[in-house]
Length: 133
Image 1 (cartoon, one colour):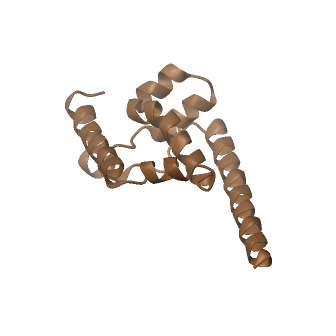
Image 2 (tube, rainbow, N blue to C red):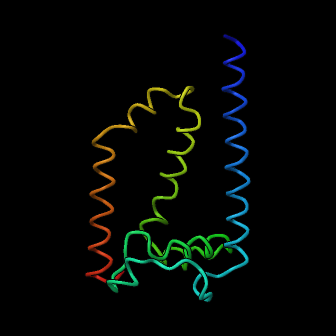
């Protein structure tokens, strides 16, 4: 029984290390390559075919700007995502430490929270395309 527990812990640590290395690699990539100036960076298919901005349009430019400490440009690239970064960071920490914070984990993983995010993201699509933010 204890061996199975150790295997789960080692497996989880391995997954965390792999995720950290991938995140560091992506951060390095976005630090050195500006998505706003590069033609070979991934393009938003929704924007390409409709001319409208999706909820994630500008996220690559936002990350690049954040990595260079340009918070104003990051906000202008995607204001909602920029404002939600602390929320996402909190959610990732709670996900990683769910055994340590089971009550918070249960409160976050509820239908009202998920529905709230879906509504917020849907409203964001309309707001940014109608008002032009």
